[in-house]
Every structure is written in structure tokens, then in C-alpha cells.
Amino acid sequence: MKTHLAELFDAALEEVIKAILVELKKGRRPQQIVEPELSFRQNGMPSISDGSPFARNGRAEYASLLEPPYNDDEARRVGKYPAAKFPALHDFIDYALSSPPDAPGLADPLPAELGHIDMRFRVERAAETYFQRCQETASTRAARELAARSTLKGMQEPVLELAMVVPIALTRFEPDRFRFGPDLFLMRMSPALQRARWSAKTYGGGAHEAVLAAATHAFVLTGRTIPNGNFFQFAQSLSRPDPVARETIDVLFAALRLASGVSTGSAQELWLGRGWSVHHPDRPEVIGIGVRRYPDWMNDFGWIRDEVPLVTRGQLLRVRQIYRSVRDISDMRLGLALRRLNAAMMRDDSADAILDATIALEILLGDDDSQAISWKLRMRAAALAGIVGDHAAMLKMRDALARVYSIRSRIVHGVRGRKQSSSSARQAAIEEAEEGARLAIESLRSVLNILVDNRRYFDPLAIDSELMLVPDQSPGGTRRT
Image (cartoon, rainbow, N blue to C red; front, side):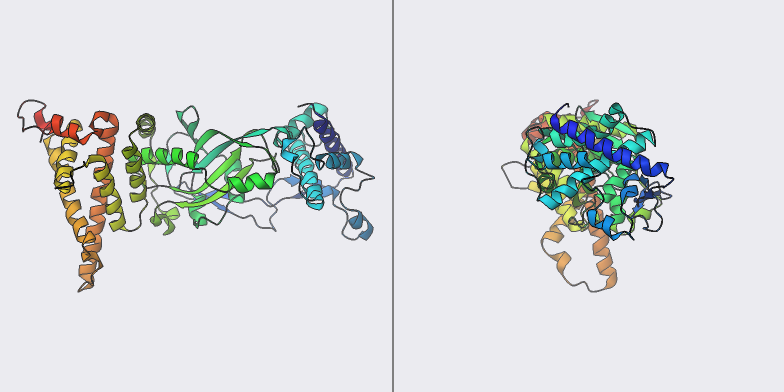
């Protein structure tokens, strides 16, 4: 974008690059920065840690060559970029801090001292990008424009495009990339993004760092935007979850759980700048949101488990089918049931999981008549099972829900809370609750999968009138109860 700001920025960038090249010709070598260290465990999950300050394991930081000597008090007083030596840089800074009309991102500048630091840093980062790409060759206008492109967009675009990136904890995926819709896909995270998201991690969500690191793939939602303005102001707004984006991601997680049964979740949500940057043109511009939306077993050294579930391409095809069907169904009960499914599959307490799953089943299969609710749910769920299975499958569904409601009744009526007479009795109660949670979640998943493919049965009365008439011994009649 050929604007006055862009011209001033190019002149400042050229000035800084030339100064660094002078120091390189003297034989000086730049320092290396400390970057997060990325490795992989035997189970395929990433392990990320802060790099050692003594290792200096990262890329060269060319601007370090311009630091004044520690033993030169006068040079340190003048600073890294004295106006007499860097007039173009100071011209750019003065203009950038004047709320220039050609830079919406600078319309509300920081206080003078912080603003000077911020603008110098932006020019420095663009210079670092230049040297990463062009090494130690003399600069050209074209090379500088390429290095400065994302930084200028971050200052000059009135609206900034974003993507929400949600790493998927402790789950492997067969393909590196898979698309669910025009603006939604799965991708394997690059090493650069892995390190960037580690640097952007926040602690407000209470997630374990090892769980946060243990993700190879992420759901990506594109097409999000935010008005440009003071970076620190919109960084603060992006540190809060976006309800619309989160709802989309939650539906996708529900589809993944329906299709695969995988117990997964996320320890982080990210906003990723698309084509623009403020402080990091040399790596992805990432703003992290701390979340803890994963099952509790992951905190119990889940990251070192030998076996991590694998989601196949075939299962992802089913995820896409479910996701698209769910987005087309306007029935509010489906959204409520999916939220309960997500909650049930992340619960640490089996009793809570049972309650979540049975509430979802009652939302889907209940009606205005609350009498004999457990009997009607068993019969309707069994009738639905007959759509995709035989008579044995129908009986299995009926018996599973009978068992679930028997356990649920004891939980609701307080048996679980009474003092047990022995350790063996307490263990038996725990095992019974775990069995109930497993059966309840399996039943809910089966019912939801069938309803998504057979939408007319979101009306429970349609199940009664079409699938629950009378026993039928004719071929195909096993779908009736």
C-alpha cells in the first residue's frame, strides 16, 4: 500500500538494515534468541518447554548488533537508535505517533515513551524478517516491501482478518489436513505455530502445560474479523472467548465425539492473524486464550500414555457429514443435547456424566407428558436402534438404558452420598457409576447419530406412530417394538 506511512517505514527499514550490514562487514556476529524447545514423545504427542537462556537455541537476532557497548556510558545514554544516526527512523516514529490518517491501527497511540519503543520494535522485527529471508545481501525496495508487508497491514488495514485455532488435546489424526466446510478445517500445526502458541500461552484457564503442549492438530475457523485499532486494546478484547466462534467449534467437537467416541478436548484457544502482524512478522501473530475444556484424566499424566487414540480419514468423513447435518437442523433441542454430550464426555465424576447424558436423552426423546418418562425413553431409543440394527440391537439399547436409569435413580435419591459400610462397597459403587456413565454416553451417541441421519424422528410422536406400533415378524419388521 503506497502511503506516506509506508514510504516513511521503508526509509526507516532501509536505514536499520544498512546499519546492521555495516556491523556484519566488521566481522561481528549477532546473538541468538531463546526459543521454546519442541520435541515429540514416543506416543507422538509434542512436548514444549521454555528454551534455556544459556542455550541460545533460536534464530539470529540481527538488531542485537546495534546495541551500544556496555562499557560506553555515553553511547548507552544516547540509546540504540540516536536521532543523528537514524533520522529516517525518527521521522517514521514521529509520524506514526501523530494518529496518521493512513494508519487506522495507530489512531490511538500509546504514551510517548511506550509508543517510541513500540514503533522501533516494529521496524526491528521487519528488519529481522528481511535478514531471515535475504541473509546478508544488500537490500532492495522489493525485498524490503516483502519483509514489511504484514507489519504495514497491521497498521494500515481498517479491518483485520483472523482465524480461531483450537488445538485438539491428546488425539492423533490420520490426515494432515481435512476440510469440513468453506471456513472450517483440521490441520497439523507447524513447528512455528507450535512454538508461537507456547509463547502465547496464558494461565487463566487452569490447563496443565503438558496437556496444552500435547496436540498435533487443531480445528481452524477462518473468516473472523476485528476492527483495527490500538493493539493492546484489541488484544484485550481477543483475550475473551467469542461466543459465535466457540459455538461453531463446540459443534465440531460434538461431531468428532459422535463419530469416533474419542475422549478429547482443548487446553487452549488461539486467535491467529491472517496476513498481518504487529510485533511478529517473522512468525505467526498469535493471541492466546486460556481454557480448560478437556476431561480430567488428561491431567493425570495423560500426556505420557502409551496409546493415544487415532481418528481415521473415514471417521473424519463422518464428522463432516454430522457437522453439516447439525448446522442444517434448526431444532433447539439438538443444540442442547450436543452441549450435554460434550459435558458428559469431559466429566471427571461419573455421576455427573450420567446426569448429563440422561438429561440429553430426555431432551431428545421426551414429550409434554412426564409420566413413565424412563419407560418411554427406553422404548423410543430401542425403536430408533432398530433403524440401523436388528432386534438384538434394540434389546441391547433398551436394557442399557434400563441399567442407566437404575443407577441414576440411586444417585438422584442419595444412595451414592451415604457412608458405605466397607471399602469394597465403596469400590463397587464407584464401578457401578463408571458403568452407568459408559452406557449412558454410548446410548446418547447412538441416539444422536441416528437422529442426525433421520431428522423426522426429532418428533418423539413420530417414533411412536411409525416405529412402535406392534411387533412385526415380517422381514424388516425388527425395527418395531
